[in-house]
Amino acid sequence: NDYIINDHPVGEYKKLQNRFMNIKTATPEATAKEMAELLKWYKGAPKDIETMARLHGRFLKIYPFKGSNGRIIRLILFRECLRNGLSPILIQCQHKYELEECIKLLLNEDNPSALIDLYKKDQEDFLINIIPLMFSEEDLDKYKK
Image 1 (cartoon, rainbow, N blue to C red):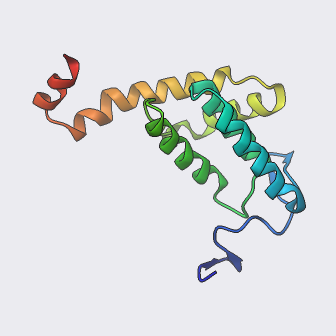
Image 2: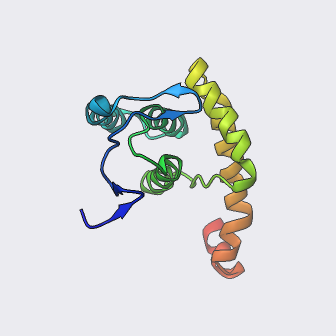
């Protein structure tokens, strides 16, 4: 691997045990197996907002890389929303602490509802504030019909 950051090859699973928000994550030895199980589950799951929330939580519980796991799963969520006809989820910086609380609820209580609500708020903001920056009023009118 030609890409090294902080003495760790980029894209390789973690070599040392890590933690996420005081939650024990997968051991380095179990990471590849748990990621394979996660991908198998995701492949068969309905592609809806609850599945995206559960994917988010399960990925973070594994915490497969040395760092940037949060950014990686948010990028995956963005891509998977686009691939599956869902409005994109782009968690904004000002929602960081709310996101952390939602993730805690999901991981500690298996309750995705707060995270789903945050996603919906974020999706609405995307449609109201971001889409108009990308298209002219005339283009947007074509899609409203």
